[in-house]
Amino acid sequence: MDPFLLDLAADEMRTIKCAPYPARWLDFHQHYPLVWNFIPFAEANHAQVPDQAGIYCFFVGLPPSSLPPVGYPLYVGKTERTLRQRFIEYISEEDHDTGRVRVRKFLKVFQGELHFAAAAFQGTHDEIMTLETAAMEALMPVYSDLGFKAETRAKRSAWQ
Image (tube, rainbow, N blue to C red; front, top):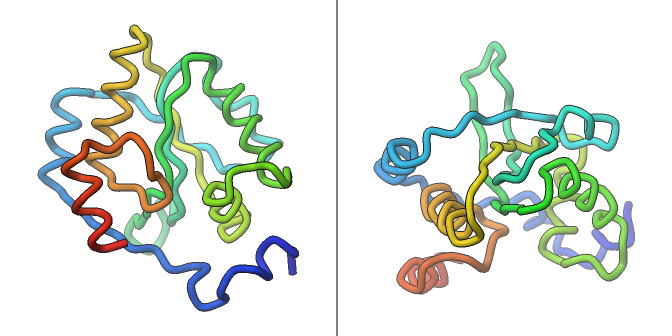
């Protein structure tokens, strides 16, 4: 087993606390009708990631199959560089000792099961920040810890 994972409690590694808010999903969709690309998170897939600025979400779940689609948002982010550059940075961060612990955790725990959802978005710095906050408020990703509105942060701390 990876030495990084040895420090994590085995029974909590795959636990995901989910707070679904369908009304927030609908509100987000009405304000931001984005087109998402879903790419399995693996270095070999970097060329499939849009070469534009935008927003992204790591999620673990089932693609359409004989079971209904199921997915859990783990982390939401934005980039004003390109989504492809950000994807490659996450590939590097997975095994880098100075990488963010929360990010390294989900990258390793769900290795081989992660998807990188990416949506191109052109806008000002403030517009992309607003988009990221709106996506986080809608999806409530368990590994994201910054960028929520103050009211949401207080509520999340009660269940995390």
